[in-house]
Image (cartoon, rainbow, N blue to C red; front, side):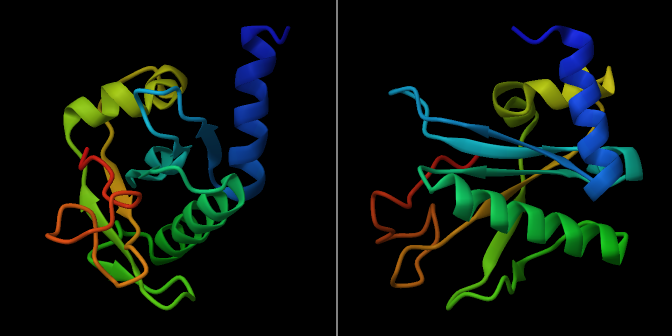
Length: 144
């Protein structure tokens, strides 16, 4: 079992190496899978959150690419962002409840809850995003 100092040291190494650490959390029956970052808040930027039962490879690739774009621009992402697919990823401001529900380890690592979270939305195969009428059920994730 890993102890807390090793756990946070691994997060620190990833942030130092690539600008952010990525957590991938698998679905538990009630809550869908989700992925989120830790480290962007250290640069005054929001952390990123992607909710949905996507493969870890897809979720990780998208979140890592969006984090690189955001840190490179030195400003929060807005609207629709090209990630190389048929449709762009869309970002929206997440709620304070989302921060508490989904990005728990970010707050613990940062030792405060004063950071923003952007939710990343991926559309269904027809280009319909979560929360829009007609979004396929598998893609219609909670708006956090």
